[in-house]
Length: 165
Length: 276
Image 1 (cartoon, one colour):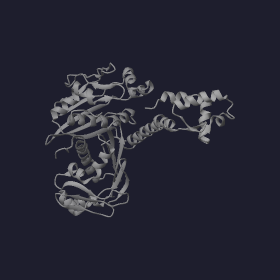
Image 2 (cartoon, chains in turn purple, brown):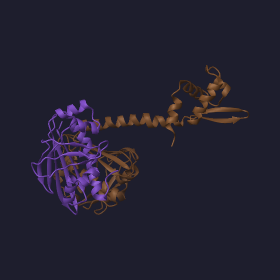
Image 3 (cartoon, chains in turn yellow, orange):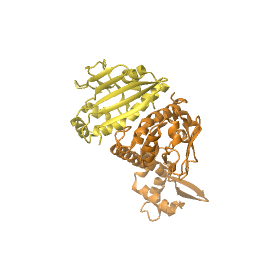
Image 4 (cartoon, one colour):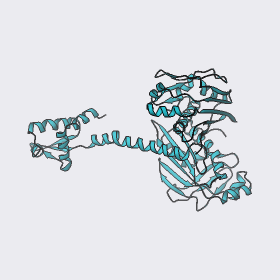
């Protein structure tokens, strides 16, 4: 079994707009939502080597870790960072049982990369590759179910002005 | 909106449940008939029947001096829908999601034999079905830069054949093995993939040698599953399989589907397909 998740979508927007949607608080909290923990924001200066935080403002949970690092940052073409930690506070906010969270935490830290490619006529090809998982990763299973929904809502937000309900 | 608290409260008493069982066996009983053999006083039975009637579980009709009691199962059906089937369905969906993930992760990525892609569309299942089947829709978002917009000519009945036509070029791809495998409107559609005829290859700018290799592969099939995933949102899952290992056709469709499905989503949400 492969140990990567990849997903491609096409969005009627400029590369700059897609970059902003992936990084800016005003956008991410609208389309990048968790069922119970609410909208996500990612405070960071998005410079290579900088850290980033995962903040669920609605429930007041912030996940910070010096290992949450921006690996590549080439606006508006490519962004890559290591994935966030699975802290007990985060697990409680998203409804993940403590035992399950401990299993997630024991896995290697994965990373995600976004490629933003202008394919002409005002359309951008966005490719998301999330990898660095161990074999039989439960984190991979979970993010594989989550990304299509997040990326669908991102596309809807940029094309219609509102995220998916 | 039914008062669920009243229904649950009415059902919480064993005596009242026995009265309902009794009416379920034989409907339209009088107070005397219902009281007989229940081990309860008439007053107690009357009180219980009042609670059941207030909860909408029992309705009464007068026949002369007598009041006859009828079971109304609608609140119980509502409970089953809300509290039982709903959970069954959620669990079944979670299992099927997990199964899909286990069998075919990562989505949008090709393993040896299968392409799987999920997208969420702000539309009704009826609209998404229309988007997949109606020529005026498919021609708008399902386009090849050389051959033009795709139209399917078929009645979409299980077992029927279909033709693929390209309006701009006038190309028609027809074959008795181009068949609708499953057709459950607004829920699931599956068909075998089209033939890579020499004319198809010419119109798509694919040389005949490559097309011949594609033609030599087993005929693949595609299935579309439509599920409601929240208010006004459809989860569309596309599974294209039946390829030989290392199939170049699989590479081809894996590159094509994300663009086609992204444009379908844009068309249904904005009224216009993505420009191509």
